[in-house]
Length: 206
Ligand SMILES: C[S@@+](CC[C@H](N)C(=O)[O-])C[C@H]1O[C@@H](n2cnc3c(N)ncnc32)[C@H](O)[C@@H]1O
Image (tube, rainbow, N blue to C red):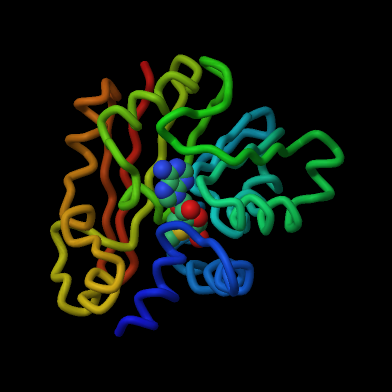
């Protein structure tokens, strides 16, 4: 259990030996939930998007096929390195920029983005209401925030117990992210859950 915990703590913040390999595996392992979430997004070819907690960067790569520009950020140096390598062509074309930072202080200007996405990452954020307010700061008026999680607080967690224990995420998994969005000032909040896949929550910065 100790060794497994040490390996899987990479999901919270990938770092050190094996973290680049772990991130590439995570890019594949999250394909089902990511593709399901991305299918729900309307992205215009003029849009500027930010993916927070970008991990191995595969969702940046996917959204770059639809948006004008996609930025990424992550608290982990390894995540930034792997995401940067995967998206190097678009970085050279200045359609992508990836920064090392925490969601607590997003290193982008006020009102810059049409869409901010967060795939499988909000479980690990340090102060949700404050962090969601910080997301609002970088959104344009009418910009959207999109959260996509495997864990639905209303679902039966028995099948996911291994992961919840492994990542110490019982409380985060049970959080009602709709309420957090409301408290942070988002409006037109909608939630969509699908059994055996996950849940998406979106809010607007009206
Ligand atoms: C489980 S991974 C998900 C990666 C990717 N979004 C995906 O769906 O495959 C969680 C990511 O969130 C990042 N993360 C955790 N806390 C963060 C924070 N406070 N600010 C920014 N990123 C954070 C981690 O470093 C990690 O890369």
